[in-house]
Image 1 (cartoon, helix red, strand yellow):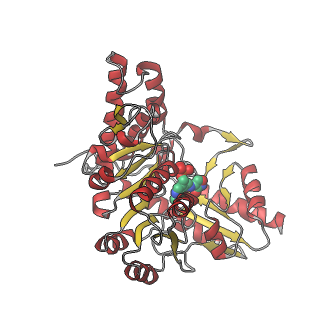
Image 2 (image 1 turned 120 degrees about the horizontal axis):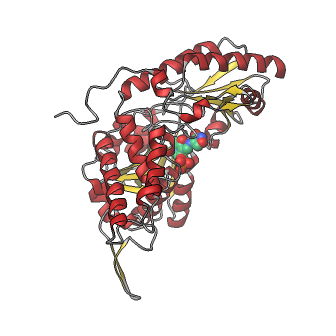
Image 3 (image 1 turned 30 degrees about the horizontal axis):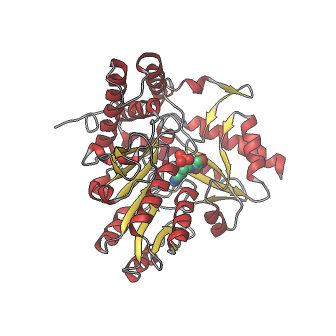
Length: 418
Ligand code: 7TS
């Protein structure tokens, strides 16, 4: 059977895609915007902006509450979005898709609920040396609360997981290791981690597996059943959807066991002052009024992505990354941070004698938006002995000409700064 995800897609046409992003017509400092900060947040196609505003203009009402028409329409639109997301990530059940405020909120839910369910003094949680702070700090807080220890898989100088060390850590700590939580794709290095293999190893030992998919979902087809993970977190705003909305996917059997994290309306079955019983999945984990407009926008963003061949999009971004790598390396004293074999369209670099902040400021004056700094991966910066990088992160609407503009502007900036 062909569904909207597997159907044949039109050939990849960057100009056709660009035309759908209104912000690309904006000027910055009088120059056409070159937006290379997609890993921080992506731009939004017109369809997503329209879907969000249509909710407010036509069907605004709270969900799962009223019997009135607008509430029913809003509920239907929200739950239709949940089904689109389920199909896109190939979750088995629609109630395995939990709406959160974003990856950070998803990881806090995961850490707090799993901590309460699983951790006791002497237990261990395993992460890696390339994690975003959102996959470090929640575990630190929870480990401290339950007397558990946070362990870290080392990374190599190319910015890849040390797989032998990871396997050894998983194998040797047997009963103590309760949770493995890894980034699927590194936001700073672009590295695509071989998570499937590690998840399989962890599963054999009954270790619960969590993936931070913030940088994966925008760039590749993610199939949670194929990955075999227990939980999978991502943000809408990095995949063409609004800010303030994200997802925590969870395998039904585990979600059933996990205690709720936040309490309030919508997540209950019965409340008395003595005792509360909780709602069924997914509502047990969705306390309070959700970001309904954001959910509808997220559904539309997935629909938008499904109109294209995700592999063609990824190939385009990868080609930009390879072109940028080749051209930037011609600059004397420039070093790429993150040279893994398997990378998405993210390129981080440092230049001798040039501070990333100064470079970012000069690029901005040319209308070029890059991110500078530690990218919320301070331990990773420590590993490389640097304070930050300049990072360009690509989307399907970016072009080779834009990469050339960035390279030319970087060369000019280096002359000024050195
Ligand atoms: N995990 C990864 C891998 C991320 O890249 C980010 C955001 C987060 C978690 C947190 O996502 P949020 O939506 O909850 O904020 N990364 C970045 C970045 O690279 N630049 O700005 C935000």
